[in-house]
Amino acid sequence: MAMSVGGSGGGVKAEPNVVPMIDIMLVLLIIFMLVVPAISAGFVAVPPQGVNLKPHPEEERDQVLGIDADGQYFLNKAPIPNAELGQRLKAIYAAREEDKLLYVKAHKDLLYGKVIDALDIAAKNDVRVTGMITDQRPGTMSLVATDNLMGPAATPGAAPAAPAAPPPGGQP
Image (cartoon, rainbow, N blue to C red; front, side, top):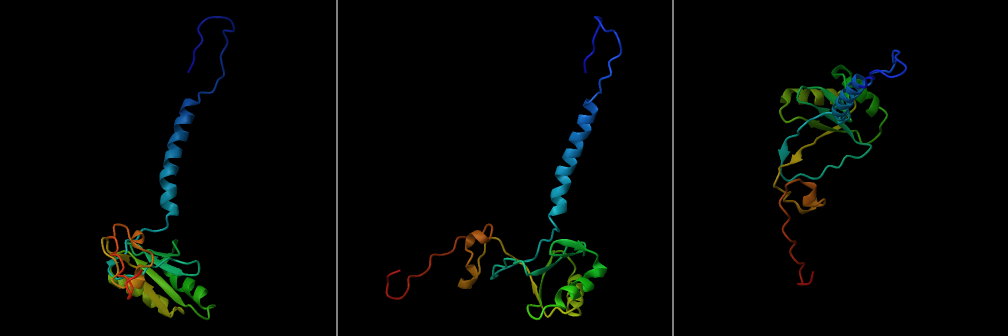
């Protein structure tokens, strides 16, 4: 902020004070930088961990029902009202002739009864098969060789795989 003392043109200066406006803009920028990633992330569910799991890459056609720790439903990472779950599933699966599969990813601390309620709603609305999504327990790999197609990099913190035995005949 500048102030002129003396000199010619001793009139009133009409300059806007932009410092408070800049302060407000910086605060809003910080707020949006913190809020937008949380909104676009979808939902947070830490699924249970297991051993001997096949990798489960999600494809475009897959339908994933998420349930967070509070019991809120998310269909393909988009929040939906719990009362509308049946209607949404019916709209998706009524038109399908095959592949009536719904993947369910629930938070590990969610009461089991809430998961069963969601599975009941799905079964009543044209879903024929449900699959539960879990995470591989850190430091472990599947003992089934074909399940480790994605390698140890697919499981964070997983131990490196043992080298494969040479085929019969001795030459790899």
